[in-house]
Amino acid sequence: MARSAHSPGRRPMNEALPLKRHYVNKEPFDPGVTEPMGAENEDFYRASSWRLVWWKFRRHKVAVAAAFVLLAFYLLIPFVEVIAPYNQTKRNGDFIYAPPQPVHLMHEGRFVGPFVYPYKFTFDLESFRRVYTTDTSKPQPIRFLCRGDYYEFWGLVTSNIHLFCPPEDGTLFLLGTDRLGRDVFSRIIYGARISLTIGIVGIAVSFALGLFFGGLAGYLGGWVDHAIQRLIEILRSLPELPLWLALSAALPANWSPILVFFGITIILGLLDWPGLARAVRSKLLSLREEDFVKAAELMGASKQRIIARHLIPNFMSHLIASATLAIPSMILGETALSFLGLGLRPPVTSWGVLLNEAQNLAAVQLHPWLLFPILPVVIVVLAFNFMGDGLRDAADPYH
Image (cartoon, rainbow, N blue to C red; front, side):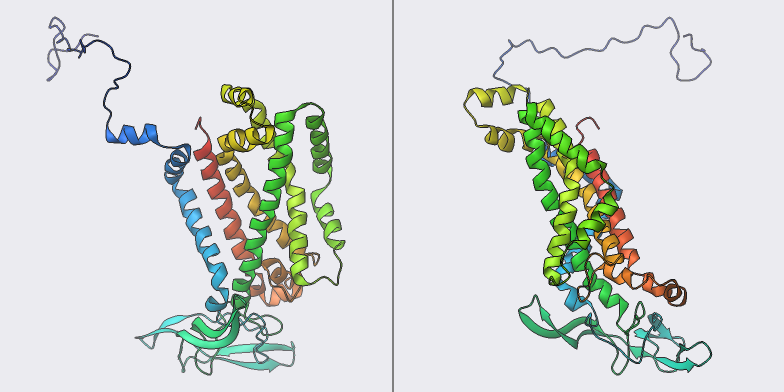
């Protein structure tokens, strides 16, 4: 295209472009000698598949933030007794259905530090309700690294040291209290241990079953594949929630809370493995014809070794992403069953058990803070979904 001569910095049409000189190595080609590469390229080409997945996952900012949120929740599990200001069974009879106490820093224009104002209540004879008022003349500082209610740490050591405690001769109800005067915030902290653990244990059961049946169907094929596929279709055709309800109701009522916990976990795992098994089957069908599989067969490797050492590790990153996306369904399943009264039962404390107390519409209308246990459920489920999306994108070789 012609360029205007009046335009500054533009070359006239009749002026020849300078020829670029290309580097040509005149040395004879030696296949044993490679050209030197930069440090960055060398790290990239020598990196394992797991490192490549980590590098791609690290660029997904939302997934990384979600991973840190989940890490904070799971680091909380071993130390719930220390973090919770009250014991989960501690009753405050004088403060039934007390509203949340806000934390303040300033009192009458001066900085005091974290403190709360004490509650006073009167009984309304017309509505038969306790009416709580705040006494703003007496700020009560919150204590940190203090001694409070006794507990058994990991069931081994008896202690009463807490991260923070109520003021001396005062109360600290960050999220209010329930019908028995128990601190809702402390019970949510205790409930995290069960609700978060049941998802990990349940997905471990589902993961093992999915790998086993999916590996057999994908590698052996034939009648084994047809039988497993028909079993999967039967399980997936059953309505999920009624099946959960039926199996949960079949658990004996005289079982201990620990047995009920493992029973619910096994039920959730047994009903969630078909999706993972189909993913494993489809991957094995595409990989079993590869050259490295044929080489392992010619060398005399057994079917179990080929599946465990050669096939499954080649798509383990995809399985981890799938399992991460399946954990929220486990948590929601336990929450739904406990909310309906067919899952975990008191004295076990989980987020579903806490929401079970909010079934009464009148109680929710008068005491909306009883719905606060739904907040950690929403946060954890969203965090797992965001992190699972990031892992899935990072594990996709074509992304």
